[in-house]
Image (tube, rainbow, N blue to C red; front, side, top):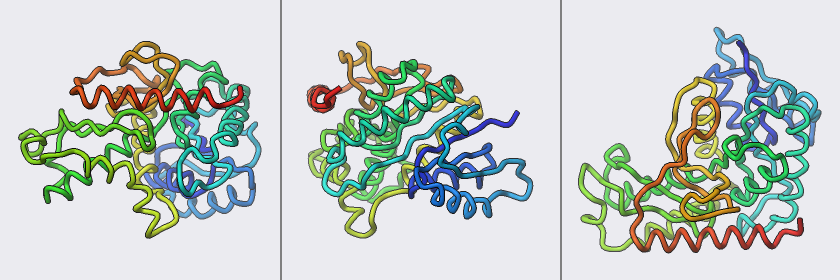
Amino acid sequence: MILLISIVGSGRVGASTAFLCVSNGLDDVLLVNRSKEKALGEALDIASAIPAHSKFSIRGTDDYSELVGSDIVVITASVEVYTKDRTENMDLQVKMIKDIANKIKQYCPSAIVLIVSNPLDVLTYFFQKQSGFSRFRVIGIASSLDTSRFRYYISETLSVPQSSISNALVLGEHGDSMVPVFSGVSVGGNPLFSMIDRRDTITENVRNYWKTLRNFKSRSQFGIAKNTFDVIDAILGKKEIALPASVVLEGEYGENDVAMGVPVKINQNGVSEIQKVKLDDTESSSLKKSSEIIRNYIKSIHQ
């Protein structure tokens, strides 16, 4: 049975995600973009990466009605590129996500939706509320990217391979208040805190990773594309994947009416479990502050 992966937004992240899906022969891909020419161009380019043995295809459009039959919809669209903070275009981004939510609800109401656009947690929240979809079918993909960056900086700080690092995790906002969880990390079987004295430097490096990257290129694309692809692959392959992701919370971690990064398991139906992990006092306090920051952003939007 051929399934359909639709990607709304054909910029760097959308195109990179589409490339991974197509080159790995995952399933049919539809690129939707406000500029039809952009969607067609990216689809034409990526089509050259279809494996010879693959039965799948890619096409581009600006017509949302072609979303009909989508099993997964990935949203990477953006009205403008942010330069200083992920929230700087928040009002316009929320308006955009509500419009997209209405279209997805109209054309593919059974789809699992992966939010990649920023501000990630705010948009995950508003998409779920606007669409009325189960909170377990609206998943913000970013905390797993932050976790990859956390693992990278541990590796660089200690000069160890990333494969020796276990249980690295970043929770909370995909933004300046994100919470790297040091207390559960082990390196080569030894607690991370037996190897470092402070968490401040690594925390700041993880939070500012995107700013450091932009000193050298315009914006990131490959890390988030790979993290998004891994979730798509798990859903379509009916496999289970465990990672942190943003979902609307209803009592988990003591939070309600907010979306933020928490540890989850995802399968073919979406989020199958929100996992509880042990945090130390510093991490618990930081996560509470992070949730309040996201909640205040949500409250600031004129609904």
